[in-house]
Image (cartoon, rainbow, N blue to C red; front, side):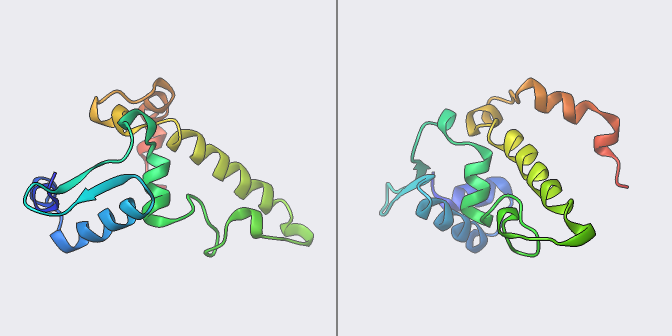
Length: 127
């Protein structure tokens, strides 16, 4: 698809979308072709591209603390329990985002564990 068509269909500014598509291309998530018949397409099957792949391509590490990966942190004293907390958070976020593919989203077929989590009323609350 052409970037212009994607931008129009999704209501995204074209320049903003071009930046995202560039990130996705550099990460090997999409391929691009120039010219009249050009545009963007997935570089792999949609069943092989996870939401985590897309987020990493555009934003970097899925979970960071003060801009660092949790494994690069160190705490001392009474703050020591924070490190396993950040690691556990990262593991759970990864579990969800690596378990959902672009094909799942396109087919409106999220995995059951994701549907179950989203169905919990507390998940929709803003504490």
